[in-house]
Length: 124
Image 1 (cartoon, one colour):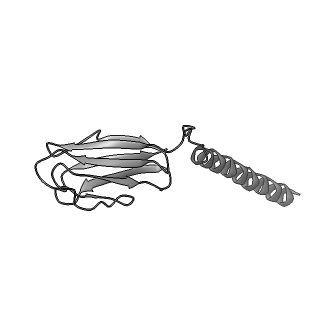
Image 2: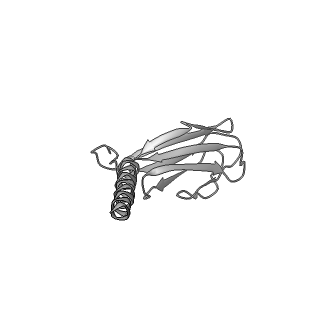
Image 3: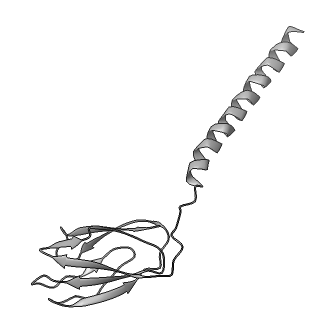
């Protein structure tokens, strides 16, 4: 009789632990399933000014389908590079427009000619 009681007790403890583990897993995954509020608007073009070896704005929020117009007001050429952006060399007083069709997330970019120049594109 004691053996049956011990086996039942151990099984209940194991089942209880499994249920608690599933609840913890549910809590962790529920955070990753949040939907990000995306503005309801047609795609638009944003401008990033390159001047004094800096990007302005340094961080930009866009939605998929938006474009970025890179305007070089520096006295040297620049070329942007990241997982979602790759421009041609943009000469002094030049510009280039890039359409962004990527998944939501935070994407860092650099000037491949001057890698210390960094910025961020946040896709909502």
